[in-house]
Image (tube, rainbow, N blue to C red):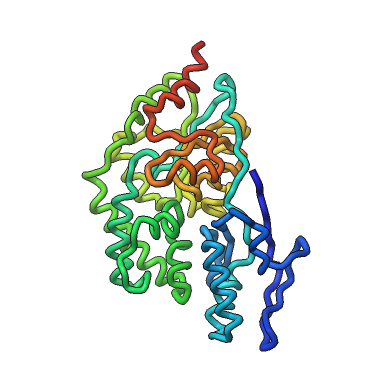
Length: 324
């Protein structure tokens, strides 16, 4: 697969036009060079705190560039792009699943991977963001949710949707949102089909197992408990407690380091492009769970295989190869 990187080293603005210094010797404006890569991932800065998020479609970038050239407010445009310091394509190179004989650990995301919690998050976010006037005052739809919310940290979500908010305001709203989620989640979450069969197989096989999530610790612990998996995981890694959360490799790298394993000795299960990017950045083969994303999206994101749930024939053919 193709990986294209565009690094913006510095952006400066003047009444004469847009000036930028870009490595690789070509202009950011030449988005045609990215061809079919219609989504971007960018790393930005907000209130001096480094955040990472799924970036806007190329069409939106082009519209914003056009807005600048028409002479509209310089401030809104520059504030957006000063945070977009690095741009890279979302398409990733797949990593082959390790030989089953060498597999020593399984690393699970939580939301959308152990349980299909995204519909509940969607309802909570839709009500919250409508009250805050986001999305032009219109209720968000599932496309908005998958593009701007699914798999990301609250800091990244609210920092992008409300760039004028300071950290204190972001944390306050995020805490309210998560409290509402926990209130609703405790009695309605169920394991994804086949999950308990897989978790039993993992323990019987003697593999290490970790939960690695961008969810707040209180949420993760509640969901694990609601699924009847208290005490099951050898390790719980919280993205916000690492130097960098997903999509950076830090959370999955922390799990590998804890188990003293190499990336070719583990498999990641993930349901979002953000989480898959994290696993792949740590060098670990990733299985894409199709609770919210399409197979095409997950394959473009670098999934080694995609499965609807843990009863997948393809998954068990791989796992049972150990016994043959």
